[in-house]
Length: 162
Image (cartoon, rainbow, N blue to C red):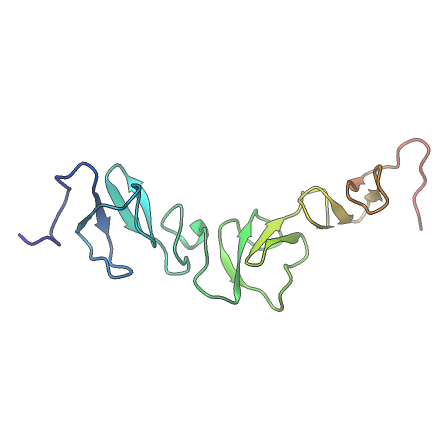
């Protein structure tokens, strides 16, 4: 029996690694400073760390390509939220540096879905910059659309612009 044939770890602070990645071998026990799993692995059960999908760079929450927390390729963006053909937790290549319609750049490598009521948004999920057909963009109390929302009808005192 070698150190790579383990099925459990005798050290309670160690995790059994399932899969080869980043210089770690399948079936070895590893103690990580601060606990948890090494980069490229996720906690699959008590005392076990399983390998992330190859689409995920250093972190994931599960085994599939839709469980990424970071992406492997530098030209890819991590999508947070599901909208318009993009899935939550997936890494996908995006043409240009911007996020696709329905998402906003929450960091240089992450595209976060706009609120379902917004066609496009800016800065945060609920700050709409355009609406789906049949809805009106209502600017709230500021001039810079910082609290604009999409409404199905205009409130009293407002009229739709053509």
